[in-house]
Image (tube, rainbow, N blue to C red; front, top):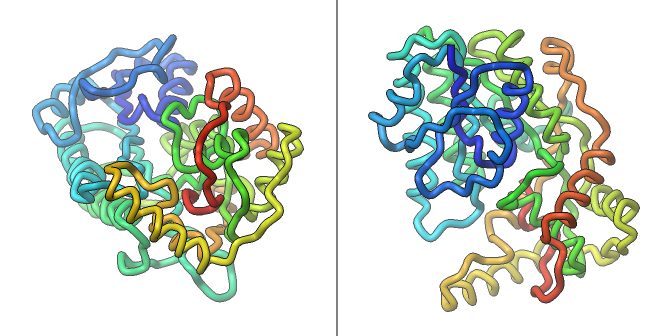
Length: 341
């Protein structure tokens, strides 16, 4: 039987596909005609052209598939037309769930995000039992992922064997796009970071996060969520780790959120005039007001998930960005934390 992976041209999805292929599974990847295929180089997998918005293409991709890993997502903190994000993340997920139901798959692993769980709460750190609402989601990306997760939960209740994983912030090699978090690393390496804001995230090595998907398929309970995370770090702590790895100085100035927000407003206005993506997304600044720290013990206990040290993952990321030409001069400064989460 085939194992279908969506999002294999992306950062986390490419690692999931490689982990499956490395275990000897017969992998099929869904790719759009316009996809950048660099992440698939050297991967032993069948390529099936299609789109999450095209139901007929999903039925073709699902033909002969026993398991599905739905990792694809439109991960942007800014879009000229936010409806595109919902079309891919919500309607696309619903379409794929329907196709999986018609195909009678034996396991469907849905990649959500820690953002649906890591909301401000008093007392204990948020975990899989934390009940959040769409009104607590900041920005279109988080809201779309919350709605898509609800689709996955309803599908599980209706009998589809869906297991949900909630990755935190993956870091490591192979981030071709790069992701918003990867852009922070690249900005740091290029000396484009005069300061940072007081925020925090949970970081996880991307290779281990991919292995967590396989563990969820093997050991996860249908209808359950599992946070695939590693270590809670403030942004300053993460930048200090990057400094020790690269030998570059970490930014010393901590900018107040109000200043970062004002900078984001100006940058957004200028970006609209120039027709480009903002370098400091407003949604990112709003997200950064809350440290997205979480309790990751459930996946460790129930799945045997055991991620490695984040220092080593960041070192692999730095080496990869340098080797692939991302470290160069000549770009405008950015405020660290405005792209995170």
